[in-house]
Length: 452
Image 1 (cartoon, rainbow, N blue to C red):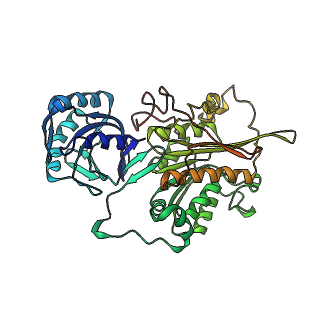
Image 2 (spheres, one colour):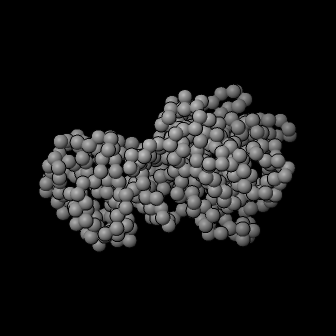
Image 3 (cartoon, rainbow, N blue to C red):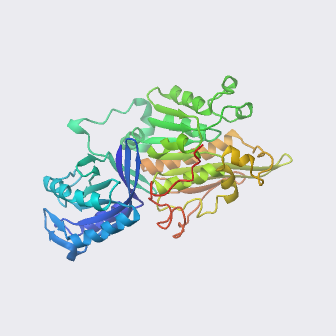
């Protein structure tokens, strides 16, 4: 799977500014982070360099040519800073359908030897924009190019642009079991749910509810990640579990639950931790992630991953403060993490010391003088977990299908019976979600994973 990802409204802005030069073609050079893992390869657009009028050697209705001196400046940055380059230009007379022309093919073949000589050992790419359509491809070598399976916009909404079905194939018919969902989400929204890949990290009291709801909604590809097995104390809130499941991995219980809803769902249960590299690599190939974990270390890692690799993530949690049998506070939180939205660091929702402890190996933790005793089990009630999980899934539906639910950060105050929307701006100097931080760097920055 190959893709090109834009953050926020960058693709909308790029299209608008380039098409303003119609009927002439116009171009921009995109500096990108990149991700490579087995058959997956993505370009993560980080910066757009528009071509000034005096940098065109030719700018006509059907072709353009950029002066080498402008290209050389961008190539120097790519080489020195590790970026990939994507060449973007317009076909102003194309509408919903747009494709590369033979002229585009020839121009790229001439240019790629220079790109790979000046900026080697990384993929490069190309995009062509029409009035509405977009088509992308990746070059993995001087003479090796492959069509991008999609071009994505990742921000408050997730929009995935895929090439049209080949040979006139039609969309698969939506089963009648989704009739009531289609009445709310539309046929297009329901089709989108069937094409998206989703990971759930943490299959406890909230994650098991999220898994059940995604299955009923028609999500067809779900990855489950959790290191734990079912314990007796889990049975009051773990949806799909029974006493017969005690000792069984939580991901297997959730997988059984999902398959019970529909045998057509591709579910991949992985017993492992989000903090360990070899156990969590599958997260990097997802379209969307739910963070239902209860540890600060895994939450910090997924927070960074959401921005560094441009994978939209919804973080959710439920907290009950109780002392001597008296409940003092019940608060839940749901927050979407994506380019253009503030992250957990911006909101100071991560405890640095707790993150440090969680990211220690077992040997390091045993020898750490600052860790004393065991963590106290926290109160948990299934009705409260279900409420916060439902808010998260509804936010997901809004981001993916366009369901008209505006908030991307909500606080649930159970004792008052209210849900409050939080509006805020990302910190422009944040170490995670800003251009000065991890945003769209992909493989150029290490994630704080443990090796084991």
